[in-house]
Image (cartoon, rainbow, N blue to C red):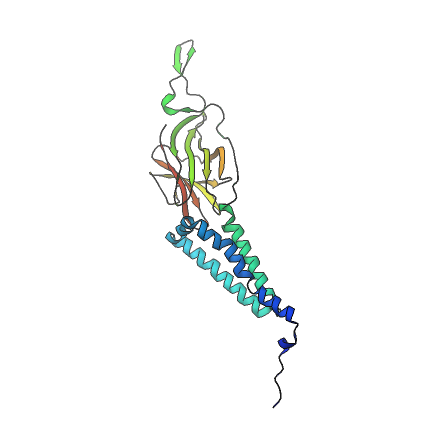
Length: 247
């Protein structure tokens, strides 16, 4: 009976050992990124399970990962290539999902220039030929609220300011909001709103800073009784909000 030949038996022992070690690379990449994240940021990670769209996003990511692994194993004949490709995919996903939680970005932008007065303190008068009259020039803060984290860390305040020309600005002050992938800012009518909607103001350009202004589109009469909401669009979960009360 002829002996069965096995090409792998003729391979150097060092090469076979390297191939066995490379098979563990995806697991090492996953544990070193997502594994650490799920342990260290467990509360934040669990918010995804309360979002239907967030769960669909996770299913899509996992499904795409499995498809890539299947295709690479079928197309590439070198057994060490699929583990490397899957490790690169894992690290790329971690750079998008995990990295924002650990890397802070400072951003400051001022759209309402000059001293800002509260709406309750607009009785300053100026003297004219007709006598003293109220002065309403300059930016006026019409509402303010403290930032509250929703399954995430957040501190600081958010207020709505009316410029002298009537335009509105949402201002974050002395803020520090936990980073998330693809953060967005909305202003929504209602108290303590946790669902995206209302008026979209833009992407969060930085998760911490001293003063960060966002222009409110014309036609949105935001103020007391509204909510400034920070939203993670990638997984459709709220990050922080600030219910607006009269200033």
